[in-house]
Image (cartoon, rainbow, N blue to C red):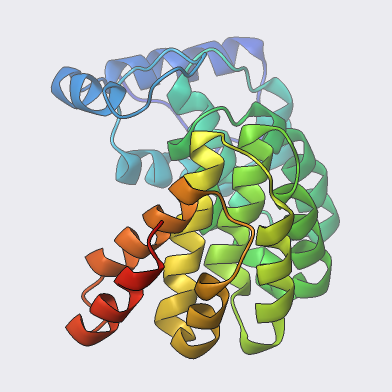
Length: 239
């Protein structure tokens, strides 16, 4: 089955054909594997690999992005993932922000969150605005709004100038939600790799819960970019 993805017009019938096209791309083995990693999502999974979805989104973005997004639905995991990739291709910042704010409320799992956050390079061109958005989202009580903020910081805003504020943001997060804590740990690992001295000082004294503290140290231990000696020194800060 083929479909014209770069169309300049979308309607209900064309969108239904698009969904049929996605279902036709199903990889059952991949679905079985990936669905075991993405738990508790409300979206039904078809089973399509991420590079294929990125390629589909790239083609859609050459056509009428806004019309596609207005017809977009939320039944399948893949259609929601593709929407995020399409949004990442928007070049007009005002238009991007409109769909960014809508889209983050659709995110209910780590895979869609992390794939989207790593793709939205436009936020780097408007760092002041989106860094502020990300820090605000990071302290949100909703699990995946918070994770979006943390993973945006991780991907786009780790810098010397932002270190103290990022540490302060992490201290404000008082949550035991798994995907928030894991994102905090991942963020700290990336910060340590880039700024080991400053991050070690934070690891020594912070407001993190024990799980996040220990997970951050474990993630640093898993990195090939950190020396054995540094890893051993960090062990004393496990709780």
